[in-house]
Length: 358
Ligand SMILES: Nc1nc2c(ncn2[C@@H]2O[C@H](COP(=O)(O)OP(=O)(O)O)[C@@H](O)[C@H]2O)c(=O)[nH]1
Ligand SMILES: [Mg+2]
Ligand SMILES: [Zn+2]
Image 1 (cartoon, helix red, strand yellow):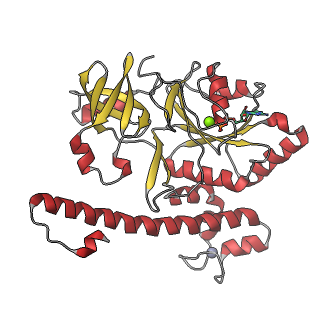
Image 2 (cartoon, rainbow, N blue to C red; image 1 turned 45 degrees about the vertical axis):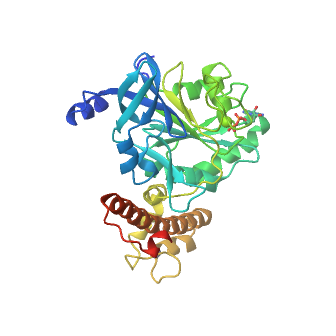
Image 3 (cartoon, protein in one colour; image 1 turned 135 degrees about the horizontal axis):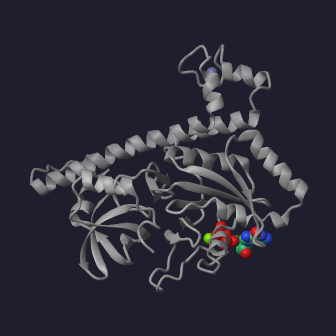
């Protein structure tokens, strides 16, 4: 497998030349585990860690390497390298960290397509699907909807589900599959060489099963938190980039416990472009479309021109995203203050201030 199979292309080459980084070796981070990284290089892979400088100057999680990043390395020996820099990310999939309000956690970077996976039995939920879509649009990742376990419902129920999606969501491809291999030719056909894919969806919907079926072997454990059989080194949950035989590389994610909308505000606008278009005709520029006078969105609701459930989900996501933004601003300020304090201690000009330890 060459780096081209893992998505290396002209734009990456150009960035290396433009930034004068030819002295480094290039590789792609395929696995992350507690600040240790497995990096795919031409004709092999190496373990890697970041430089002390990179750790010191990091202001948040996003400054650390993530699965999917292109990393510039200095080789220490055959099996170990130091990461000096990561290239600009053309897309970043992130979610709100479960433990820490206002902090984003990068799921993966440089993703071209996301398969939004939902099972058609109990898991199916169109509001959740819209959340994943907003996240994709904000991250500049192209979505493809994959409905799994179609063996568990009859044709009438399946058409009902597909119709309900078409009613709310425009222009996104839907592929229906099950583990008897229905739909896999379509899924296979949507894979392009050198492109990077990821699977998003709740735990238990069949994501690992999809990877195993595409690989034609059981690389991923199913029905529990996935643990790849990777030299037995990695035992807890992690994210990994896997190369597929018919082209493309794919990441299986541990199920998202909650789909926080994080900083996907921009994505909400793309997803609900119909509402945004209506809003152009609201009387007030900052109209929230809740109880304002001469609100074009509320008018469309009354006329039945706008789906009420779609509107409700839109309002819910906007609210949540606004809440996240205020937390994020507060957190960024705290991080900055803390960073300043550390620097001042180093310079020996720090004066104790109890506020710093709040
Ligand atoms: N009936 C049915 N079960 C499936 C299908 N795909 C996966 N499963 C089962 O669903 C469970 C969860 O699958 P898994 O791939 O581990 O889901 P993940 O948590 O999303 O990775 C396993 O027991 C699978 O065997 C399917 O198409 N039909
Ligand atoms: Mg899994
Ligand atoms: Zn309005």
